[in-house]
Length: 355
Length: 68
Image (cartoon, rainbow over all chains, first blue to last red; front, top):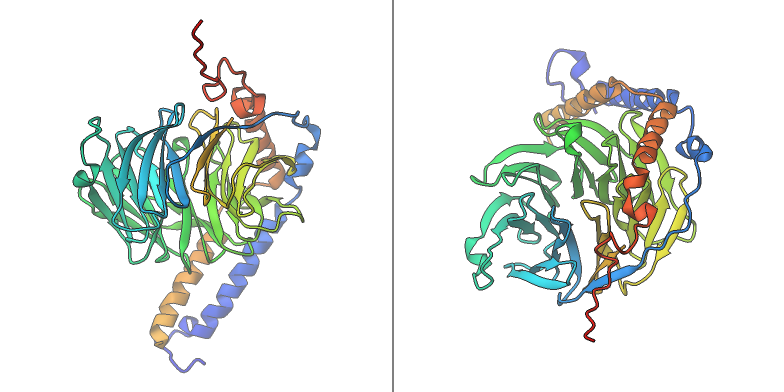
């Protein structure tokens, strides 16, 4: 095995490196275990249980001709952009359910879409391996596709995209196993993030107060936290048993939740550097495709492949409610910027607003 | 699959593991207490938690125009 010795230093051989890597992995687990003095739900035993609350399907947005794959809220808390397998990207007014803009992409399976912070543009992409930005025109007759700007180029499908704190930069994740940060104006790649061993399926930017980091999840069952400036992976978590479809920061920025094909959602605390809660039930056997927190972080909404949305008490670890309504897999779910509602998108071609 | 690229890849893995093993961590009890504290502090401003009434939640208002 050690037939290739690249340098005279014995510490550089493949076998010694492999041994060192195993030792370090064990050390990592030991360090994490030392601080595991209690479970989150035990700490939460003393607080009051949540009362009954009513969340209902308040609006249904119909118009996509095929599966809805992704959606995002505008900062104005009423507009929504959604993208579909049929190649269409639609901007809706969620209060009135009216469609305000529609763009037809040159590819099918538009898996990612995002609203720009200014509300003046949307970004989207999918099987075309690119992320493109469309400025939204006030003139309804204007052909949005004509002003399209190609920003990101990956070597495989675009799985997620997100503007940073301005309209000027976009973060993307791809089936090519990498994430990247791009300058919208020039299309230049500012930073790339390597570390996942398989397709990266999702990402989320840390709340602005917490600094320049983001979390990504992938088919390698790993969730990684990255430093946006250096491209370095700061922390990684590998406790899921299958693909991680969705990651979302806790509102304080100190933790994040993940949803996976292993039918569980999990909470990872960044300062304790470990998983601190699992949200699962024996009766839930289908994958969780998308997760998001309520405004205070007390509730975790999970959209699942069994067509339901489960509402979890984040602290106590129990399920508060199941929401029925979609007639096929829930593929995407986001809480509105002020927490008054959340929107879910599904393979049943609709989006639903719940409040 | 050359030996040198395996070694380079392994070196990166080892470097990354060294970095991750050395970060500062806090006890779960402390981290959990702070997560809980954040929830409690913001609970009243969480509309989905408190069940904000129709008058203040735009999605719950049923806009009905009636002509008399």
